[in-house]
Length: 184
Image (cartoon, rainbow, N blue to C red):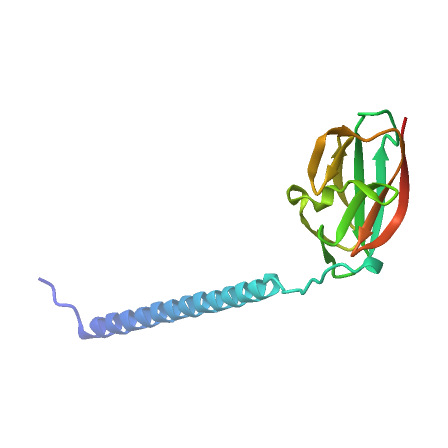
């Protein structure tokens, strides 16, 4: 066996130490880079979550002067026992929006002081509407030409020939135009 001179052993040991130091330095740099990327990603994620977290907004009930109500009845000239469709379009001017309950909104068909039909008073038609600024919401009501008292059909009675008024009220105050309905 051949004997290796001492100088070569020293060179090999020094080369191995330098190589290990370089590998340790590179490993440390990789560790620092991964830590830095992870910290930045978690900060970015936290910032995104903070931005997208929902904000609480108090929405109040609609006041009559904050809403615009349009009503359309089709047809307005009826014959006895012919029904009609009523569309009520509601929008608000309140920038945060508002809530409109059908306890405060009343659609009614009257003959003089006698209520012939009030669909919004019936439990099946009760809704709470969230109105957003500038967005119109339509409500549809169908009348079958029968007379109702407190949401109950009065026997099999149809509204008689004559002129009726279709109107909308908010908190008991008339809003918008009354539409005359003629049954002939």
